[in-house]
Image 1 (cartoon, rainbow, N blue to C red):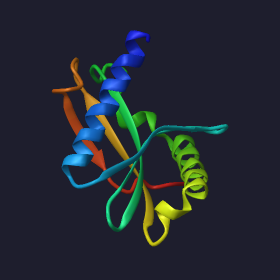
Image 2 (cartoon, rainbow, N blue to C red):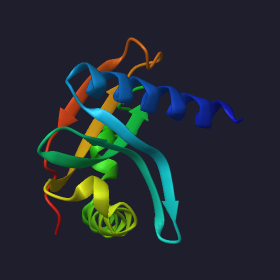
Image 3 (spheres, rainbow, N blue to C red):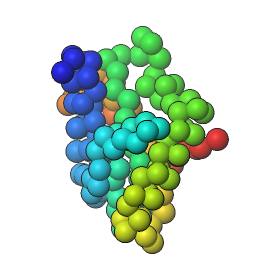
Image 4 (cartoon, rainbow, N blue to C red):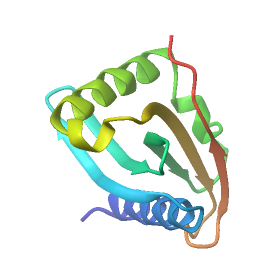
Length: 122
């Protein structure tokens, strides 16, 4: 696995641990369809949450959230709908939303973590 891929995977692991510590259950990781990939799908009693995780060593190339532009948000929503269609039993009675987690630091396990709930979809 390339160093960059391993770094991103470490960030996703950190995000999953963070969400689990806040009462979410991880339902899926790196779910793929022909339109792209969802990093994490988590849920609590009321919500199913598609989570985009962006991990960066620093902000030299911009904040991680800057990479989640309108086009990316629209694609995440399409992927969310596709995931829900494949997992109807997990979605039933719950609200779907998209969250973003940005992790900044040389070591994802101890880096700063920011979480935005309910990212606006264009």
